[in-house]
Image 1: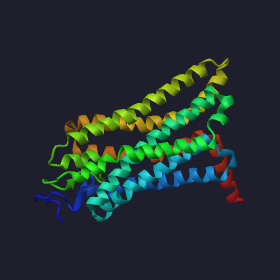
Image 2: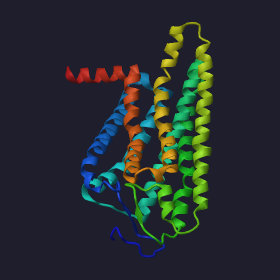
Image 3: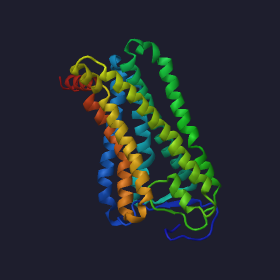
Image 4: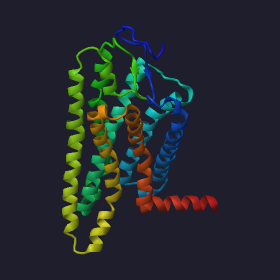
Length: 315
């Protein structure tokens, strides 16, 4: 199937992913930083998982939530980058209709899960700072497991209508997606039927899932800041606030990405297509790289375990 295929069809057997339109000649060079990001994301997140698993002192709610975040980062990177690199390296642009729907589902599902995990981590910080004496009785292992299960189920069910709606639509103009991966709104734009339901549901997910998550995170941190400012000394306030820094950085990396996408989508007609596609890819794939680095640099327990690991190997 050629890239110029514009024949009428209702259910295409394949879609064509263009990668980064306008920069096809530079795909091999562009693949170098993306491949590097993928390697760092894989190594960094597996390192976090290994350290938490092998260090008994890290077997607590905060680090269990961190492991959930690391797993979701690994899944997100793996859902996107292998196919992206095959486009850049081998010009393998075709993706099956079902495979495209599956990739779309997993990308949106994992992003929803990550948002839920950030809420769970905010809850952990709230309980640790505002109710420290009851921390171990509130966030028990069964409670953490239930929170994790709720995050996964919500992420999986909320975005389930995306592939269902997309699979029911006729695509009678083109099967070309100007991205290196399949996402909901990119497929909606290709449909030649009424897509208002898909557009409204996408807005519902953005406002009623991510919006509510941001509200609960903000509410948690209002209570956290009140508790911090009530502490008697400046050192105590700084030390307590320091336990939230890593989480705050991760929140900023995640939600600034969402805000960036929303703004770029609104003003995309004024932005060169290749620039929009390139920056959108970077912003989507950067958090899985940054998250393990942020927690590795900011969390003393992880640093100490990593140092002991390298010293033991070097001895």
